[in-house]
Image (cartoon, rainbow, N blue to C red):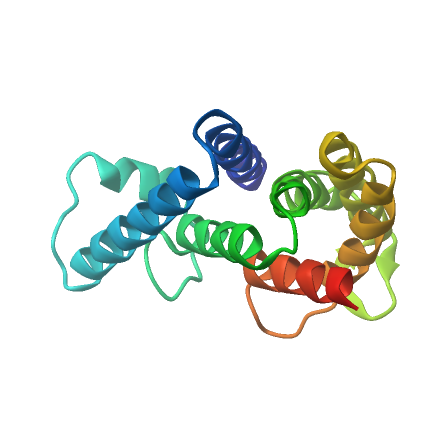
Length: 183
């Protein structure tokens, strides 16, 4: 159940970024993301140096994966991916759509993929059920920002996410989205 809770937080974080952009604008969202990345990196460094983080220790135990390089890695990487999308996407609407695909597509892929039985041929850790959940959820979440093209982008990004290249998918997905859009 722990991984499912992580994915709900992943989706909620993406929604928070989107709402921040819509409510306060791109610049405010970028500043908030940079502040969050800085704070998360600082807290992770403090923890790696052996100091207690007080009440934040509970969050780490509840939501951080066991095999991470740095505490708060998942949250920081999601913020870095969102920052990349909002900075380098050719339009703000495409940047917000990319954040929506990252949050909902990736979150739903894990949530539903865990229960999937049929593995994709190129990655034994991923399932067709997760890939399909990514494509559908990401498309639905991004459609308000870029229309029906969201389903095409989300499907392409679902396949990209299913390939293990050894880089955090919170970075791979936004980079791939911007590259695909610019091609």
